[in-house]
Image (tube, rainbow, N blue to C red; front, top):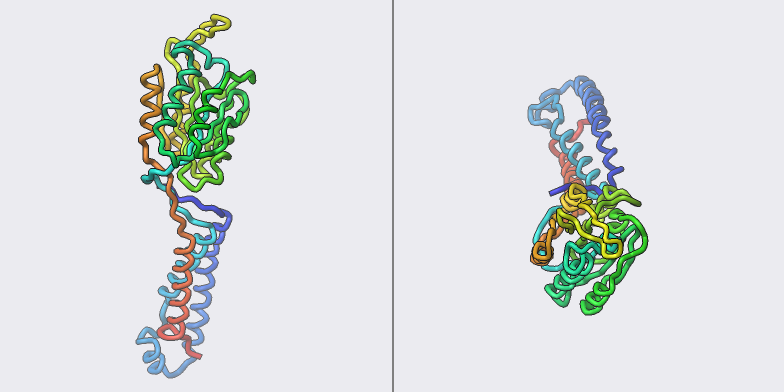
Length: 312
């Protein structure tokens, strides 16, 4: 569970609590001096309930709590937590860099990734919203968010290796997040890659953006320990998977990281995601806290005109 503020700049108003206490102390001294000039202490005792020179700590506490609740309401206080839901909007982000032609998966990393992505789509309900991007040194929107799963599978099957060099995980996350911006369901990105981010946007910045938009990211690291051979050059590529970054991406957004070392573990990763019911839920406390502040303000007014009224 996490507490976030949509307008954190308003939290500076909490500093005024110090000023409130100072004003209260000076006001109390003034009231005391005024009370000592009043000769009929029996009358004072009857009015104040035998607490002639009250410290008015109750009133101070009410004012402090009123200020706190009003400030938190203005700051847009929201609680986020992981709950359960069956409604999701997905974006499949598939690495299409040149290393995905490696043949340590049958018939290649990319083809195996596409095959299991299509199987994943087949496991979803017909009401699921889904989009697809491919990425290398930049990102390509293959399919906008749609509930036409047939069209989604067609677009996945047509993904090809991109000629743009490098791997930009940061841009892939931001592009995927933007596709999900207007979705009202729980938003999930499934990011599959066989490498590490070596160009473009820092993945940490992209993760911050995904968190602000309440988007979960599941990451799949796809590569065998032995590596694979590129079909065109017959060059043997070694493992370059940055598992630490992928784990950080998934952990910080409330998702999960999966390591796929063969076709079976890749299928299992997609299966676990399809069965997952995790959702980033939010509770907006703005209205509640503003209501409490108004009630405390009304209570203060009532006490000032009854028990704690000031004698002229």
